[in-house]
Length: 480
Image 1 (tube, one colour):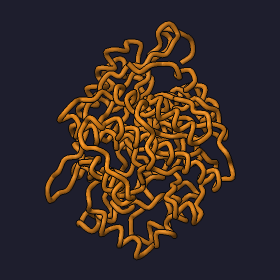
Image 2 (cartoon, one colour):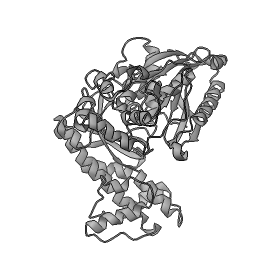
Image 3 (cartoon, one colour):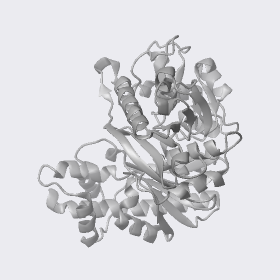
Image 4 (cartoon, helix red, strand yellow):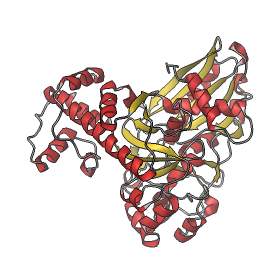
C-alpha cells in the first residue's frame, strides 16, 4: 500500500445493515483516497409464518457478489483485501457441509421470550451481567441459541454470526471476531473468550461455536471461483471490527483519550471507550452495556431510540405532505422550545406505527396539552424529539462521568444524525461539552482503516495509533 497512484491497490468494505447493505470501494487518485459506494440494496426481515421472521440470506449474498464483481471491474490495479461489518446477535446455523441449515432468524422474532426465562432460571440476569457485562436483551445470541434447542435444532449444529458468515461464504474459515462475539452474551469479560461456565450451565456445545479472533485478523484468500477474476486473484479476507458500532467508533479520527461518543442514527448509542469493562450493580440497573472495541478495549454505552422516532412521525405525515429532512430541521429550529420533554425510556416508543399519538399519550400522563395532529405541527414534533434527545444525552453522559470518574473532553458524533447541526447544538448546550461532527459513513471508514492498517502491518496486534492515522487520512473523504 505504499507509494502513490497505480502502485496502490484497492480495498473493499462490505457493510451489512438491517435496513440496507453496502459494498464500497477505496481507491487512490493521484495519491489521495477516494471512496465509492458501488452497490447499495435494501434489506429487511421476512415473515415466514410459523417459521418466524427470517433474513433473505440468499438474496443478500447474490447482491454482495454482484457488488464484488462490479468492484473488480472498477479496480484494474487489483483489490488487496475485503472486510465485512454488520449488525450483531444474529447468526447462521450450518450443516455438515458448511451450508446454511435454513435462512437465519431475525433478532425481532419473538421466539426468545420463553428462552430468556429458561436462561434466567439457571443464571440470574444480574449474574449473567456480572460475567459478561452485556445488557440483558431478548435479542442476544445466548437466548436465540436456547430458543433453537427448544425448537428441535441440535446444539451440535455449528453456527457463525452474520458478518463472519459472509467472510466464510467468501472463503474464510468459520470464526467469531472479538467485537461481534461480545454481543452474544456468551463471552467472559475477563478473558475475552467464550465463557466455559455459561456454555456448561446452559448445556450449549462449545464445539458448535467458532473460535474467537482479534479484530484485524487476516483470514486467507477468496474462494476459487472469485480468485479467477484477475483483480481478485491475490485478494485476502480480513476480519475488521466486524460489529458495525465497533467499526463506526474505530472510524472516529481521534487518538485514544478521554472523549465520549454518540452513534446517532436509527438508534442513539451514548458512551465512552474504556480500557476495561465496568460491570457494577449501578451499570446493570441503568442499562449500560460493555461491548468489544476495535483496539481490544471496551465500548461502554447506553442505547435509546434515536432519529427513528422522527422517521416514524414523517411516515405518517407523508400522507398529507412530504417533508424534506433538511426543511423540517430548519423549521424545528424556528419553533418554540418545548416545556415538557419525552421519556425516551418508555417502551411504548419502541414499536413502529403512529408515533405522534404515543407522544400525546405521554403528555396526557404528564398533564400536558396534546400537540396538534397533522403535518402542520411537524416542526413542533421535531423540536420535541431533538430537545428530548439532547437532554437525555446530557443525563447519560453525566451518569457515565460519575460511574467512570472521568469527565470527557468532548463528544464525537457519528452516523446519519451527525449531520443534524441543530441537534448537535442542542447536545453541546445540554452536555456543556464541545461536539465534533464525524462521518455519517463512519462504519465504512473504520472497516477500511482496519484493513489498511493490517496490510501495512501484516502481523502482530494493530496499534490504535496506526488505525487512527488511517482514519485521519480518510476523514475528509466523501463517500460517493
